[in-house]
Image: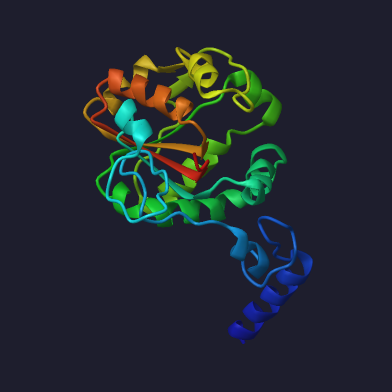
Length: 240
């Protein structure tokens, strides 16, 4: 009887609250992407730069020219898939359209990409946004992703370590040099939480890695407060 009731409730739930594709919104049988969108997502795997995660077209176990020229403050960056014209709509929907339910699936994909590298991590820290932006948006997408990674990994999650201390212009559309100048000095570590950073391996969570300027500045601040290691984990990254 109980299995019949559970089955009936599941049918009613699917009728009243149908599952839709995270990207296009079409109905699907299970949570995630429909078969058409799945084919268009460009998942990232080896070979790629050992530091920033830039995909290589040929099989290289190496570091990319950008990281060789100027090594970033973070130790490694990992993304689930490429940020392109197709995946952009899903990321923007999650970031600006209040579709926070997508965070659960995005978190699963992120964890699938970074699980091995999270094995020895001590704490998960999201990239913060300015409080005025948070008032307008009502949520920080990086915090939602960090919470999902905490659920899957069991690693402590602390959103109060990093803080945005200076309001900056939107990074979209800025050159690499202007992005770097834009975020310089805009992040800090809350003095009450410095002991949580000292000597620890940190998972820094954001939605997209573009030039890496935001992740690099956050990592610089964390390393300044004696973080032993910083691994950046994002949903997507721009293929530079």
